[in-house]
Amino acid sequence: MQNNNVPLTIGIDLVDKFHEICILNGAGEVISEDRIENEVSTLNEYLDNFRYPKNVLVALEAGTHSPWISELLTMRSFKVLVGNPRKLQMIWQSDFKTDKRDALMLARIARFDKNLLSPIKHRSKKSQCHLAIIKSRNNLVQCRTKLINSVKGMLKSQGIKITAAHTSLTFGRRVMDFVPKEMYSSLAAIIQTINFLTRKITEFDRNIEELCTALYPEAEVLKQIRGVGSLTALTFILTLEDPDRFKKSRDVGPFLGLVPRKDQSGSQDKQLSITKAGNVYLRQSMVAAAHYILGPFGTDCDLRRYGEKIADKAGGKTGKKKAVVAVARKLSVLMHRLWKTQEEYKPFRKSA
Figure 1 (cartoon, rainbow, N blue to C red):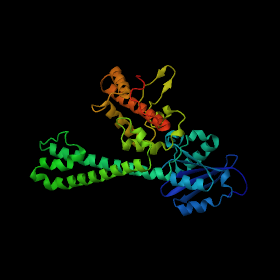
Figure 2: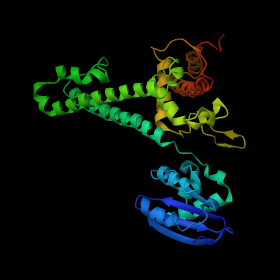
Figure 3: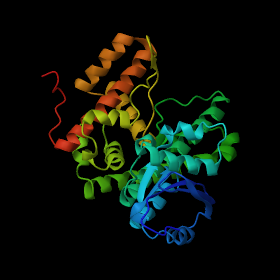
């Protein structure tokens, strides 16, 4: 396919069963449009046609298959750009969207200006495997929460209200004392499942503690902050991977989607919600830590005072929401700074 040392640009639209491929020559002309099966052997056979992979730029969107495909392309010396789907409205907002056209648009965008793709870098296999532990735990927690709410709803319909004192950890053991005999047969299986999920979640928690101790000792630096546990610290480390990827610690907030969206035109500058870009698991962890810092169990520190000041200024529920997001954003900046410098955490550094 590539007969001489001529630069080519390839756009690949990744789909579960087939991949659409569009190839542009140095003049930007379409020289080939192909469809191949989503198989490692098929993809390798197709890539064998390129004699000079170092002169081939490949553009694809981040998705389910992009990690292993981008790794395969990189190992074969291709230049790879993995585009951020959130930044490619010109593709997914098109009135004539097809897989073949998506591949063509990816190739054209990469050839014109690679920055328009807002390219991302996939995490290493090691980080992905360890993040899978956190994601699996999160899925189990969500399943347990749905089952607990289901049981509470069925008991409430019988006039039985479960108090807040029954936490998720003890719910499965204590709730049977409130279940009427006529409902044993219908709720026993669900409660057994809740107990099973609780045991598995506890096992995941032990695995996370062991990972922090054995492979990620830097987590101890982040855990100096009251409200940041092993789960949040490990999620932060695995998601960012390298503290030097950010020139400034303040860049972490936008990376996690904890900054407001902008819609400014002329004299209008709308106040919008946060972007919610980046890793959803880490953002949820940061928000949960912010809730703890501002909650009844949080200790007095600069972060808490900062959040309380914002909450008092805005007032009401809106003020509390703004305070939580602001503290989560400031917490991410602080954690990155501690990780990078390995210094001791001082709760009242700003006040001092």
